[in-house]
Picture 1 (cartoon, rainbow, N blue to C red):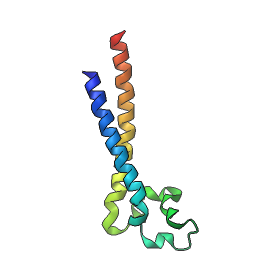
Picture 2 (picture 1 turned 30 degrees about the vertical axis):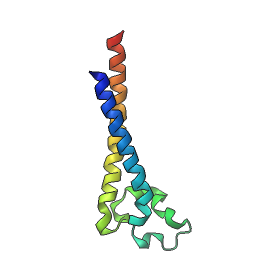
Picture 3 (picture 1 turned 30 degrees about the horizontal axis):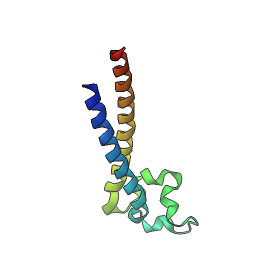
Picture 4 (picture 1 turned 90 degrees about the vertical axis):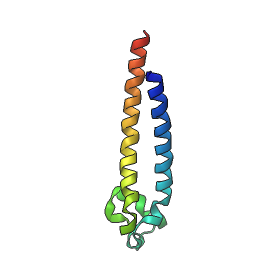
Length: 95
């Protein structure tokens, strides 16, 4: 039974990871243009200083991307800890 939960969590975390990576790549396109003025790093301004996770850095119609990055990142970390717990629980049950 635990094995099925682990498989489901692995698939969900893989899908969320791909979703977050796509949003990381698209983040400079969703950011406010004022963010890049006087910045020497080009489109990398969104990645500096955790601006990627700040709603103020995004255009008004693209705030959903910021929230999706935040919540998906938190969900991936939580799923990782749940998987570790289930693996340890499965090891205890088998021994």
